[in-house]
Image 1 (tube, rainbow over the protein chains, first blue to last red):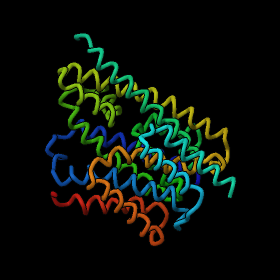
Image 2: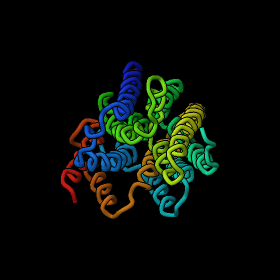
Image 3: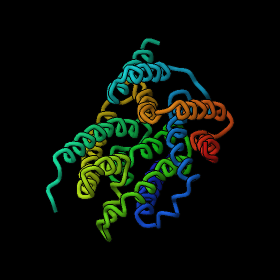
Length: 104
Length: 221
């Protein structure tokens, strides 16, 4: 991605994020209180974060690729099952992935 | 203004520090995706909502278009609007203070404010402001550290940074999977994302999984 596109992402993300926050403080409650909107809104983070795990852990460009990153994600999964705190989860993934990357 | 309960200050501080440390992961992820240290810091100052920031740099890192990155971030930011609706009647602020309140309306400030309900509205307001400002300070400080650290390390794969990013997403997802139903939604979203990956340009599969959330949430269970 070109430098100007990077700035576009930064400015677009920041202004939309702020607009959404300001919207909540400004509009009457009933506008956003529709039950369907609330149900979908509660599920969106789960769907998007799930997709991001897959996109970052298993995809290169538009192809599914199994490489050192998967080892890292599996290490993170083990750490989460063991109730490890967030920094431990991330470091476990990084160390495992780096080991596989260098040994492979 | 009455004295703020000590437990409110303690809650606000511990949440601020714990969440702020995640900023290291964001700074590192942002630099690994190709953003500069300055851009990474501006993300945390201006966007200031963790999941959206991670999503934007995540889409860029996976080769997606600018529009996909912004759309993914915006969809994750919609919940802040719902938080604002809950916080506005409590805070009763106008003008510049309302702009400040809006910028720090995030998961943590809203969560701490709501959790102080048994102590009264003054404690709720104090919880909101202390947590919002606290997270803002720590999040930005740790973003800088993470970005500088990643910059110094060089090749992301060599240090496992390319796996730290999906692990961070998994870490953000994990605490939300409270019920079997939500775990099924997560599983279905992952399968869906994998299936559409070869069919869509990079970045779009991430946005497309919102279809899963819409389909599942359309009717009451």
